[in-house]
Image (cartoon, rainbow, N blue to C red; front, side, top):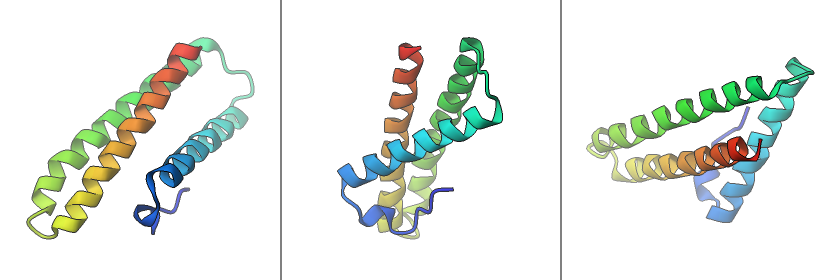
Length: 99
């Protein structure tokens, strides 16, 4: 599991590297669970991850407004997390196209 403590102290390139590495690790781990993935099962998995990420990204943005009343800095971090989640989602959509 990715430890996010301190991730916001990294520059955007370092964050993207971590996200790509984490996504690759997740894919490798899932492949070990089911050795022979069909194209349909991969599509299903990608669809699930895309929907899941989009839901979290929306939630992050909505909650950041409320969190800003407590801490604007924390709210900004959460909005940035939503942007990073969007980047992950775009990579998953690219993976879907690459099937």
